[in-house]
Amino acid sequence: MERYTGKKIYEGIAIGRIAWLGKKEQVVERKHIEDCEAEKKRYEEARNIAIDQLRALYEKTKKEIGEADAEIFDVHAMMLEDDGYNDQVNNIIDTQKMNAEYAVAVTGDNQAEVFASMEDEYFKARAVDVKDISERVIRILSGQSEASVDASEPSILVADDLTPSETVQLDKSKILAFVTRKGSSNSHTAILARTMNIPAVINVDVQEAWNGKRAILDSDKGLFIIDPDEETMKVYEGLLEEQNQKKKLLLELKGKPTETKSGKQVMLFANVGNLQDIASALQYDAGGIGLFRSEFIYLEKDTYPTEEEQFVIYRKAAELMGGKKVIIRTLDIGADKQCDYFELDHEENPAMGFRAIRICLKRPEVFKAQLRALFRAACYGNIHIMFPMITSMSEMSQIKKIVEEVKSELDNEGIPYKNAPLGVMIETPAAAIITDRLAKEVSFFSIGTNDLTQYTLAIDRQNAALEDFCDVHHEAVLRLIEMTVANAHKAGIWAGICGELAADTTLTEEFMRMGVDELSVAPPSVLKVRKAVRDCE
Ligand code: PEP
Ligand code: MG
Image (cartoon, rainbow, N blue to C red; front, side):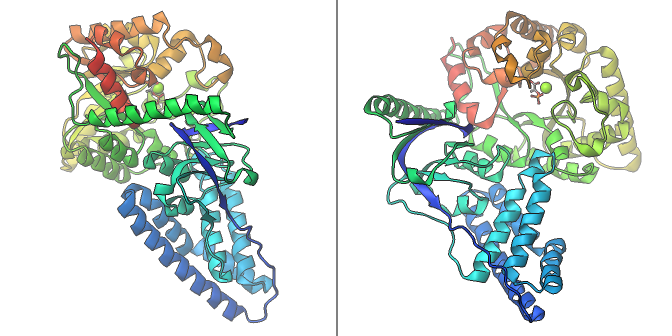
């Protein structure tokens, strides 16, 4: 029995034989050619076939998984249609008089290197996409077949790396889990694993020699066990059975109310970062969106998203949720979420630095563009707006002044908008302590326990070395939560929790006792929390 560790991408346990995803090493020959025009034509034909294949993959994925996940193949097709990519290939053929396979391989490597060197995690993850499309074109040029997995029974798929197109082309009925050496949490392969509800772990030191061996994947622990002994096997068979029972039971909770045995109703919402996550929130039966981290819209771009771009996204979010609350948090950039184009100065202590609402108040043009988009989108559903990192009443009055300016500008321009309820995130001790006063200014509170814990306990949430000191159930944090809820109720407004603690079911009973009105958690945790609430007296 051997044990290997890696990083969890999607939770769950799987037991089965290993199927190694055999990829023939693409050996690209470097050949001198005479007829550049003929070679460019050969490339052009292969490229068109690749684009047709990608369009077909888009349709297949859209049908089998959903439109949001299919979009990656549309992006791949667009990358192949991109002049920059094609000019580079044709230029290598023309100037170096080299064969098309070689020109495509060099272009793919060059562009992947550029993406991989970018700081932004989203762009870093695009390196695998550009390699994926280049490999596809080379395969077509050289008449090779695609990577295949040899599995007669449902298996744990093990590979060095998995491209998005390989992932969706796999026969889902044959895959129990994914284990790969490469990948990142932000890669589309990871996103697909989550959407497909398949346990997945990356960064494992995988070996081809494992092919056909029995194995256990314990994704929550990031543990991959090869050739388990009988005792370990028995333990995990028990756990797997438990997991299957739980999943079944949880699915039965879809459509059921989130209320305690004594009839206290709780709003159970989902945390999202983009429109794809909203599809997942709906799938898990979330009653609304409790936290839309709008900064992800900014993080995925290399320049400020325009008011119009934001309006389209917020409007879609409101429409998708069909009248249910969609609480959109305004830009929370800074600290661990850096955007180059904001050109923020280097700070010694960024978690306590120029971030979130502080940036918005100092750069009202950025803030106003977002607020305009939000108030306009509010016409299409039940949008609520909340502000992160508040510490003072003065910030609240500055925000309100800007909100009024935005509304009167929209009035003057004759642009339709709707008043959206405003709320505050309680994620600093300062805000929690003045909740009696803040409650008179807004319609709701949402407690951000991730930052509230960080600032209350003076423990950097990014610093893994402090894990032993971080008591996430610390009395001080729980008291601040209780105080926030009590002050909200005194002023007649509601208070929820959108930090990770909301999904901690060992605290659900305590939260119910405090009178918490709303819990907002990652989409796959919604039903688990519903069960915990329904188990409360
Ligand atoms: C929080 O701080 O608890 C929170 C929900 O915000 P984020 O995790 O995005 O900082
Ligand atoms: Mg926060």
